[in-house]
Length: 185
Image (tube, rainbow, N blue to C red; front, side, top):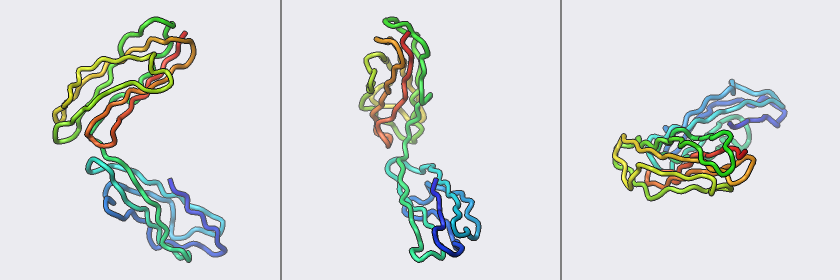
């Protein structure tokens, strides 16, 4: 979200609020910036990202108005990926210290039109030793195919425990992450 604030002494009049640049179609904007904003007033512009291809995507939010420094631009960046991990967060809840939980399943899906290379997986973060995984994923995943990752939680101490399952792949935006949480009791 971008806030446009009128710090001048006269109304700020807009002629356009638009997304421009190389990958402009990957971004969309909605705003409540009517034709003008009074002195001291403000309006907001919300930008969403829906990539049309994998990899780095760029654009600009361009605001054209009657200010001396018009147009104002805000750089937009995002990374398109063909990897879908579901769920994005796994909460194991309470687990007795030293005991292993039942496995929770994460689905990795290749939403792209070509094979996805998977170069590795791992668990990172403050409490990475409290979590373990097994997987049915190989080094390549066909287009529109899925594989499974089973994660367990065995807390080594009491209290909140956190880590991340990381998937390293060729699908854009690598590594992908799934947040892992649980509480040792």
